[in-house]
Image 1 (cartoon, rainbow, N blue to C red):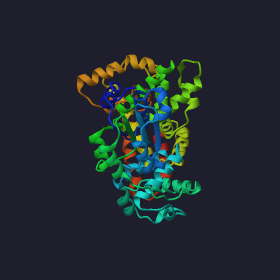
Image 2 (cartoon, rainbow, N blue to C red):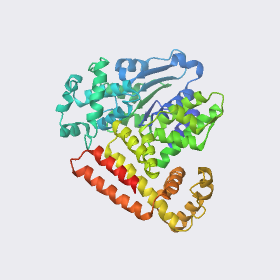
Image 3 (cartoon, rainbow, N blue to C red):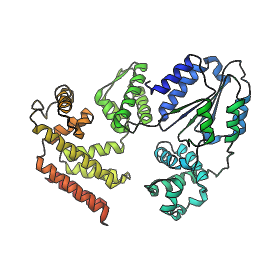
Image 4 (cartoon, helix red, strand yellow):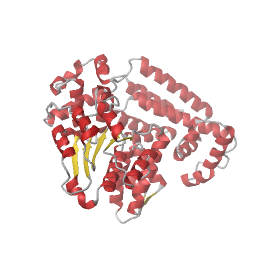
Length: 453
């Protein structure tokens, strides 16, 4: 596993016996947090001691009295003792509400029970109760009040996810609960009372760094941040490194095209990618190599898939498929402006490829060549050209497969046609934002226009 330098150093220190009394692992990269936690437990506690000297507690059933007792009670077997507090509430505050809302939205479809637990925390911190929002009472909360309480700049798509999560919580019979804060007591234990050899490891999705508990952990122990990289290439790199480690351990490999397909379906989200990779490993059984068809067979169709299909259909001037794919996206709740942004990006890439071809430096390119040959013949020329000329066309920094498709499909368009398409897209952007016309009709007309030229 490839970790950032700080986590690697912390694991190295633990291996040398330098164990802090407490650790905090937080951020939205749940996969890296989980893997780091596993390694820490293995390094601190011998296998035979884990049944009796390892205590797990979950944040949704947080009990300060039980946590205090676990921290102060000697281990059943002489030696080290680990207390793991997963997904704690103790480090949340109202300043964390926007991060909590983001987690709820992300988990709603693939882990609804976890989303419900986070939503109940959200309600308590926001000062609302479940009864305040059920039976469509959530509609009485104005956008201004919502933004003021949650700290969000815009109410976003709450009309889509909020009624859904409320209905699930009501159906599951979740009740509003009062939880002891307990922060002051835990701070006191960590500051002076935690016994020698005891280690508290806390994980959290979001934290408020101004809280006293955060400051005590930072002073007495170690804080590790696992926030998702906002840089696309770094995020992809993390997925490739993690996938490589898992595949090597299992004695398997994956075709480059299959990895591209997997990344497209998961958006190169680390946790989702690793979960789907585990399915692929199980699916292929004794077979060592995972191919693109395995990904298509096992990994479900996603919004990213549909967007890729839409842009590919437009580049291939296939209006029938483009219209059906756009309908799927709109039915999945993808906003028309998001779809438009992806179409604009695709047309821009096609124009970039057209401009690159016009330089005369890419005469070796043939639209009929496969991706492997393109990587060997065209990509090196593009990198050299970009480095020598100092040009920073957006396309040159994309994944080779994206560049390959742009070169391949740009042959079907003239330069003037692509310029006119971009002008049309800007007009549609203005129409979607300023007129009261049905976005679906506007987008359907746009697709017919782009494919007919």
